[in-house]
Length: 550
Image 1 (cartoon, rainbow, N blue to C red):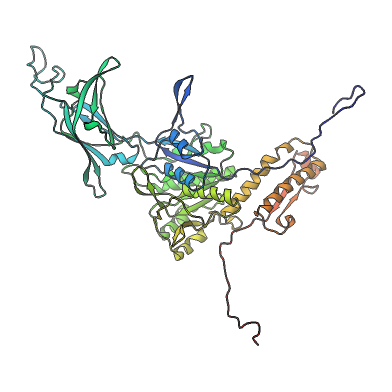
Image 2 (image 1 turned 90 degrees about the vertical axis):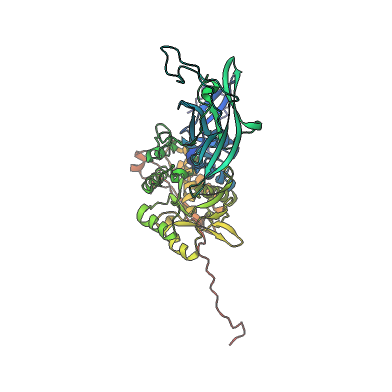
């Protein structure tokens, strides 16, 4: 209580007015997966400093920003395409968590002594580099080595005698690509690649110069060691495939995606993101060279994603069906293998085909990133209460499997949302169900509407904590929550002709008896009548003889 110690006029501010509850954002996706890199270069006092972003959630608001931090598209990784599809379909911001960066395939070209002479590395990170090989031909002969002196090694030993070049240090380099039928085809030919000794920073080095100032689109070639003379840097005639060390790119594991909440890594580390509303792990479907998709891993990680979303209570997992499944197979996967039952997850089928701008060819990718973009677009244009379906999938060239109506009849009731192509209407999302067996939580928009309302009320009523728990407080809470829900009703999210038909807010003596108040509890009961999508539109048509018929 204020003190009044001397006569005078006292002006006091009394805060008894309404405290409007502001709606939270609903369109914030989180992508967890593999990227080309995970670093950001910034200048501090004019000095470039590289910041490591591995396993650190980064807010991204456009594709250019993504490329600055995580690189470009990576053959073999689905996360870059998913993020690109998210922005293309209406997403405006998201978090990206890179749990692994993809190395570049490489090999070493050997000299006559069998030692590394040149290092060859794919220009593009990812698994596409393992489909390359390099060939060396037309290597000039070496001049005869000087006779060995008494006590030295045998004549011609490279450790004792450094041979001199006979003519120019040039060779022909060929870059081959593997075709689907396992046949090699030459993609690039460079005749007369030159090794030239130059002086750089006061030190003699050997540089690899391609003819006519050209360069390879597929590989980078460098001298393998420092201070290596041109004679030892000259490769012998050979062919070498580019490979990725399995220690650098092991098969993914469940723990890699799961992460740790303490270390703020993986899916578990997403607990610190209060504004996340969608969780995606598209690279769960990524396979390493020579490996097959581990369906047990898929089930384990997707189950962990669902558990995380249920624990947080404010986000939904967008799941991909495994690739190359027929409708009957995906039904068996959904019902008998995975067996998910949660309103905090949605499953989409089949995969979609998009254009890879790096490889310049169509590729098949999981659809979750594009679906998240459609959810965001739907939220921004219609509202979270509108089912995110009957929407065009921007950027999709086709679906991997053309699902028919009869096939969808078996998938829709079990919560598999189909992506279908319609003549003259494009490729559209044709389902809006969760994976819940509870009819009350059958639709994605109902689950997300409740997430939105619950989070908004939770954030907007923090001022109530530690206030005197009396009838005056109860009235203020009823007023503020009712005002917010009236706004939600006016936006078309609740069913009813009046606010009284759409919702109720109860906070009285019945809910808050003395025993409950003694425990420091304030209980408010809210009931909502959410709108549900017109999933089945039925016109009943019959013959009519007319108004004058007898």
